[in-house]
Length: 457
Image (tube, rainbow, N blue to C red; front, side, top):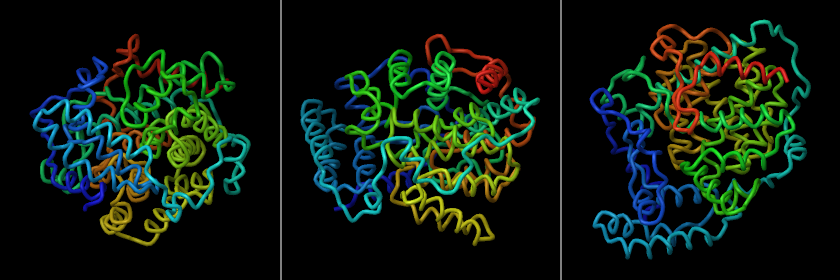
């Protein structure tokens, strides 16, 4: 029997991108109504990514994600082919029963204690997480803040450019992207800023504005309940838990197979922008935010992203940022070993294509939305593209995976180091659009000014 990751990878390798030059995206429609009951079950047996059209089978991905975390998911995996068949045939009643059996198998899957994931005891409290870091800077690093509002503006621009660039091609392999678009070095179509990445950053800003640095994970979780009706993968589970009265950190860990996916890593940039040149504070804020929807390695991913962003205010070489930020996660964790592996491959290989071939093979078992293989793509992009935004984004397209989340992080770091090139900023304009009620249309300039004001708190 094939493993879940093999089934999902076959789906990914065969998926040819929907040509966004002739097909529109479906972001607004996808989040206009909250699915439940049979509609939710149907969606989780067959979905397409709203921005790119990439195929997904979330129930298959649950089994893959649990396997990646060191669980024996063979009982659940055996049910998946029949579930796909029932969904295709529209046999709703049978599909309900099989889905319940699948979830039971996943929730009771035995642990493989020899798996690398379980070789480190992940601390729950921030003070203990901090104690597991390397030798790092605890206090703020001095720098001239006179241009802080403009730099944060460029950081936001870079993030939104990268996200908009990647939205059209996320969920596919680099090889398949090349077949449709060739060497991607610009926007596929008119860029759109609507996606599910930035909304969590906006919610954090609201809480930070009200409570400052005294905010808690509980405060954030309740604000999610107030503002966000529906999420995807780890955020969907977290919202389900929060609405059932399961608060952080359990909201991010309880029955959440996706808790090591990219959802926390993709939103760490706001924590770095609220702690410019203060990497330890960026990591602390990321930990507070991360445990709402993730645990251990998923949270460390947000910490790494936040520290990279914070360091970009005081360091101007991407390679140095990548290496220094790696010390701000628990050094015995599997996530830290992934960072060391990626940096070692990058330091050894001269040709980018050779490096990605190695990294892609190292992390082939991981879903395209996982934190581990996607941080490999980020490191690959910034290491070989350095400060050239076009080259960095082109490398992300060659890597494939979750290109919009990765583009957001890469673009943010580069924008903080130096102004975003007109090629990328001009088509974006000054408008950020979201599906959050009351935040449908926002000025990027005003958002940056607000962020800079709060960063000085």
